[in-house]
Each structure stands twice: as C-alpha cells, then as structure tokens.
Length: 135
Figure 1: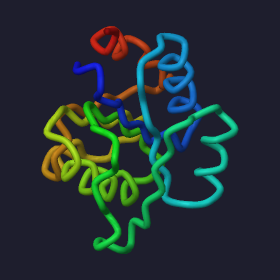
Figure 2 (figure 1 turned 90 degrees about the vertical axis):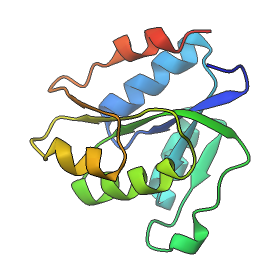
Figure 3 (figure 1 turned 180 degrees about the horizontal axis):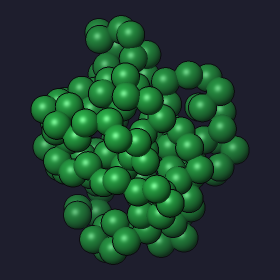
Figure 4 (figure 1 turned 30 degrees about the vertical axis):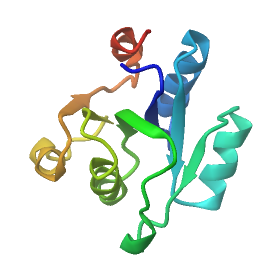
C-alpha cells in the first residue's frame, strides 16, 4: 500500500465501527463514506477526520475525492446501499473492494458490480483484514 493511499470504509454498523477503531489503533490512513447526515455526524463522533459524503441517488455528484483511495471495505447495512457504494467506489479505485456481510445476500450480485471479495461474518470481527494494510 502506498503511503499516500487511504483505505475507504463504509461503517453503518457496529462491525464497521470496530474496524474503524482497529484502523485508528494501527495508524492506518483511512477515510469513511456516508450517504446521510446522521451517519456523517456519527463518523465525526467516532473521530474520523476524513469523511466523504455522497448522494447515492445522484450519479453526477459521485466526484472522485481529493484523497487517493486504495482498498475499500464496505460493511453491509442493506443490499441496495452496498450495491450503490460498490458502483461509486469502483470508479474511485482499481484496488480490491471487500464487502463484509452477515446476510445471505448473493455474493455474485456484489462481485458482478465490482467487489473483489465478499466476506460472510456473523460476528463482524474482520480485524484480520488489517494485517495486509499495516505499513
């Protein structure tokens, strides 16, 4: 991972919040994405300094952020939102996109949209994914 690359995280649930805490503890540069004001503010309360707000309904607003985006970790809240985030983030990076889900949503849907890895986790503990990110 390049020093200037940022990991991008969608953290709409407890598992995503725990993942953010792991990134902070390890000193890994990251940004978080949100599609509504409540989640955007919650990310700020978690101490996320680089927050990206997107309107998932307006394709023309999906501008590439000023940050260089590397790997993407999307914690699933809903099938529709996760699919939209994959579409948005795939345009922002050629690096792997990970979808972390506790549901039985079809992995082929996510893969078809551009996700490289679909990880099923009932506990949501995916701290092991950070090992590859440590500089």
